Length: 83
Image (tube, rainbow, N blue to C red):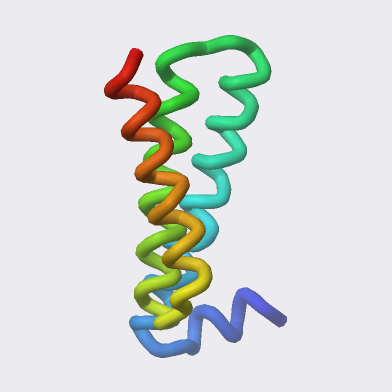
């Protein structure tokens, strides 16, 4: 079973697993908040999700994943600063 595999994995893999799923859940909450017009909560949630996925990219040494989320983070911060 998958849960058994994660339980027996190295501490680094468990951290990546937790950050990956935590960031995914928070981003989905951010998309939901956007759909319902719950500003500025949507931005805060999306920022946490983007930073979480950037961290996963860094832990995986995945430059494409890091680039996408770094650009998203920059765009969000620029948009928030101009508001």
